[in-house]
Each structure stands twice: as C-alpha cells, then as structure tokens.
Image (cartoon, rainbow, N blue to C red; front, top):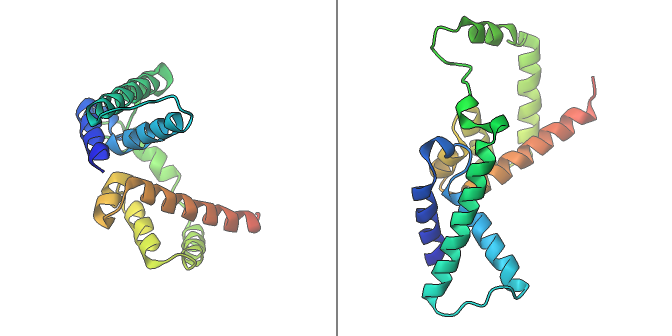
Amino acid sequence: MRYSRRTWKLAEGLIAERLKPRFDGDDVVQSVFRTFLRHSREGEFRVGPAESLWKLLSAIARNKISERVAFHAAQCRAVGREQSLGSNDGDSKSGELLAAIQPRVEDALALVEEVTATLAAFDSWARQVFEHCLGGNSTSEIAELMGCSRWSVRRTLDAIGVAIEARRSAFPG
C-alpha cells in the first residue's frame, strides 16, 4: 500500500494535465505493479532493502510514463488535435451535426427500454455507475463519487456494454 501511494503521487506529479484524461496515476500504478510482479515471478528482479525497491518502482514508473507520453504524442493521437463537438468558437457545423443525428422519439424509447431491461440484471451499484456515466461524468469522477477505483468503474461499464451488445445482437434488425 505504501509503495502504491508513493508511485501514484510520483505519477500524478509527472503527468501533464492535458494528458490526464487519457491516463493518470491509477493507470501507471497498475502497469508498474503488473510489470514488477511479472519480472519478479520470472526471477529478473532481486530487490534488497526498501530503498532499492522504491528506486526500482520509481524507475519503472518513469519509464511507463515516458512510453505513454510518446504513445499519446504520436501524430495520429496527439492531444492538440482533439476538438470538442460542443465548442463555442463560432463553429455552427458541430451544432448542425448534432442536430442531424438526433434520434426519432420511437428510437429513443426503444433504446430506453433495452437499456432498462439490460440493467435489470445488474445490482443497484452498477446501475448507479451507469447513471453517472450517462450524466457525463468521467471514469475518475465516477470512481470518486462511488468510492472505488477507476478500474472497478471501467470493469462495470465494460460488463454493462457487453450485456447491451449481447442483447442487441440477439435481436438483429
């Protein structure tokens, strides 16, 4: 626990704010410990005192962050290329696009029925997570609101997505 908290603080301090919507300290901690445990299991790491363990973990964390920054800075996914559909920069095309994709009332009602039927199989906690997601909250915000990890939120939303897709696939057309 002590090392995960220190690793998280290190990562949060090194990750630029503009990249945090893409990955944050939680992501780095998971990756660092997965790597550490895999290499330890294979006998590649021999760690002595606690000080050397922290040096190793912090080095892994710095490498993970450097890799992720390079990945997200690649031309095809550069953060600077992102554009918001809801921007208020006088671009009326985004508003026209959103208006053009508005569903018909019948389609919206069918979607609500399908989602409601799918969510009936989940507990109230999972339904709350989904409601927060529909409310526009990020995974990190939902985790904070629900008092859990981002990974728990992601797993829950993934499970709901799989259930919705399975239901949709069962009724083609």
